[in-house]
Amino acid sequence: MSRCWVDGIEIDAVMADDRGLNYADGAFETLRCAQGRIECYALHRDRLAKALQVLRFEGAASIAKQIFEAVRGHLAGVKHSGPARLTVTRGSGPRGYCPPSNSNPRYVLSTATAAEAPDEPVRCGVSTVFWAEQPQLAGLKLLARTEQVLAAHEAMEKGWDDAMMLDSNGLVISSSRGNVFALCGNEFVTPSLSRCGIAGTRRQLLMERVLPELGFGVSERDISLQEMLSAEGVVISNAIRGIQPVLALNDRTYHLSALPIEAIKAALQEHVDACVD
Image 1 (cartoon, rainbow, N blue to C red):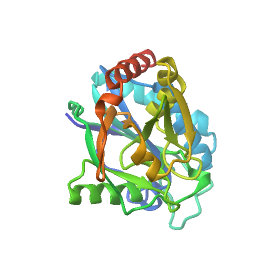
Image 2: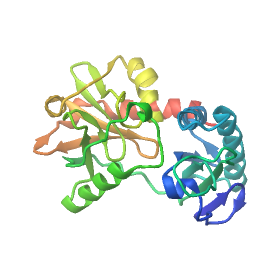
Image 3: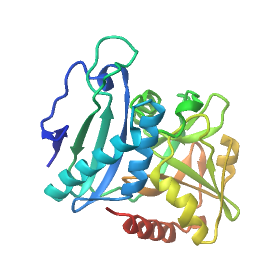
């Protein structure tokens, strides 16, 4: 059953003058929960704090900590299992882009009925929608997700499972719904997100722990579409689905046997289970 809390009150509406609604002035986290406990709790909290700091919320780290503690209480109280979304905005404010000096941040927590994450490999096309470059905001999960909305719509129209997204220089950044890793020899390459894109929590675990422990090198760098097409295999990662192998990208079909997908899934889940709170 879906439920929603706004600043701790179970209600499914926000004020019309909310700056998140009017100016995308805020950030969000997509969470996966198990019996009321949040997977990768600290990674999500810290990423939210960083986003609020970049948006110049006063006391960003304290706000993120307090909100996550409140959210943990709501989710534990209903023993929620499945996806949840936490949105934090600057709260209500007058017209105009400039934030009010005395803003009161608002949080919105919504839960959704748990559904089995699809386990099948995905077929992707290359989106005609490019990521807009903005180094100051790169890596953060801010509210304005227009490029991904358009890319996901394109994927739906063209019958793809997902869309691979590039920047204006033709470099791979992500898919419309997750981070990407390409297997090149004994190394997994994931795109640099120094100019745009979202740095996912599962991406962080894969880079820092999972893949090195499985004996793979990990490189975070620019990767061209041609290099992605030439890779032995490609996987997509996000908080809800974990990882999924890519079966095809445009006309390129990958040999799924090149990927130790079950070993990666198991190791990732082990690390996720170790950082549940």
